[in-house]
Length: 259
Image (cartoon, rainbow, N blue to C red):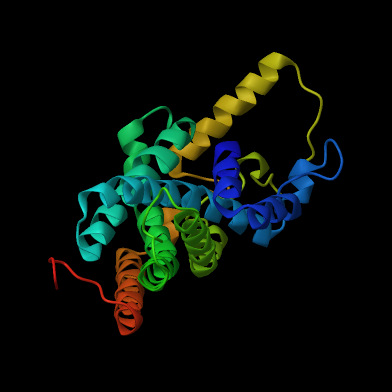
């Protein structure tokens, strides 16, 4: 989570720093879990975890593909795939190995749905911002120019806005985690002083519970049927297609040279 915040602050500057201070930075020592317990802060943590990976994949691939002079439609396909790979295989599965007993491919399977729908909604905001501004601003697609980084910063913020609702919904349904350090305790439970052995037993028990069916607030996949999951997935692809269509009204998207 710390890496996600660092990357988002790098990409969005003062806006990301303000969001970090507002939603994650504890005002007093020992108050972090209570400070981030609000649903909107948990949803923000979920969102930032996704945006950090997706934006990193997009920005890195945009820097690379610029040098090949490809049509912008091909650029977008490469950037989408790059965002998906970095988001799913690194920021979701790799960084959440502990939740799945160190089983990497189990982590990939368990986070596939959440990453896909969340990334689609990030792209709903990022693609129009990137394509339209790069079409209107000379040199905005050139990573050696400051304009490029300004466009990418605005695109990242736009993606955060469009992806927040779906992340809020998934956190509320238990389909995605929020801030990992604030897994809710059972009602009425109070932490008591424990020996290191007892703490280890508690951690092991918590891991077993997570692995048995992703309990606590994390990934209650059983609460979403296959039909519901398919509907949500199709809906996010539909939103992405709509955003592409709207984008073409203001700027061309070509798959071939001269297209």
